[in-house]
Image 1 (cartoon, helix red, strand yellow):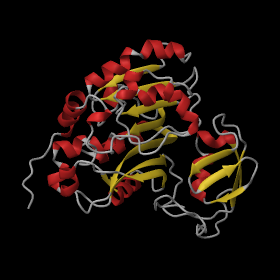
Image 2 (cartoon, rainbow, N blue to C red):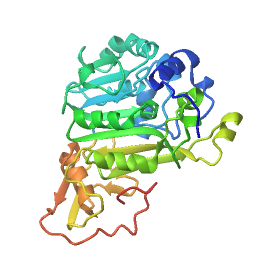
Image 3 (tube, rainbow, N blue to C red):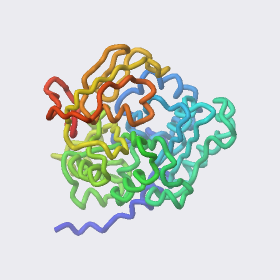
Image 4 (cartoon, helix red, strand yellow):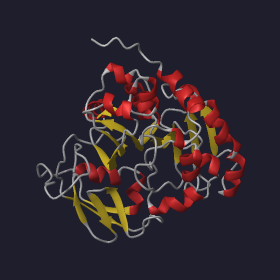
Length: 348
């Protein structure tokens, strides 16, 4: 029986990211570092950011989707604002960006550059704001129900003590057809209390890692039965004592896309639908990737399951596609035998 005392995740997060770490060089694992290179369309935008913002960045992925123009984007656990300021270069004058973080010292850095970068990116003065507080009550932080197009997060949701509450808050603030697009740490099994309550394991984004099946069940309970794995990579536990204590557990970073769509089903169903990409997303004029198994070349009709059609037709992506067919005739399960997902989810 475990005797480990429960860890206060909020206090530990503020201490670890506000006091223990001065930069990425202080990390003991690769969990809070970039697991994969940002896509080409983001790289130059990241280079435009101040060095201080980049030095204290502790993300594990690139959770910024395409087609951000005019969107309201919320970054949960924004830290020094790297992903907010990257997204700011694509939302346009009608876009809004809200960064939420628990750690005052991180937000101090983010706010230091708000006026300068807003002007540099031709945004109104009120386009970007940062708020301090926990992620468990976004309404108390001024984020209204059904007001957000996209929620992003970069290696932060694992730090939350109750992930179910946070996911429920995300579903509450998203508009119908809104998207959760986040990078985080996942584990091959549920962690024992001795690791979940260890301050270093938690601070290094391992102690609160999602177990894949628990994640799937939580999303299904929020009427998000289908999600897509955009990328994944194994994580190295470089500290020897941490590696020994976690032996047998595989950790990996992954970037996930999920939509708030009541029409989604828990299996790939065939309704005879076709989608054709128009090539109208500026950062991706030739190929649009819904996920690694669904890459649409401009002008080429592709058969898709009902869920994939909904993720296009009932979201901000609709104007970039022609969709043929409806759900008025059903042809059974969709044949996904040729699809090769990065990791298994409920759909190809």
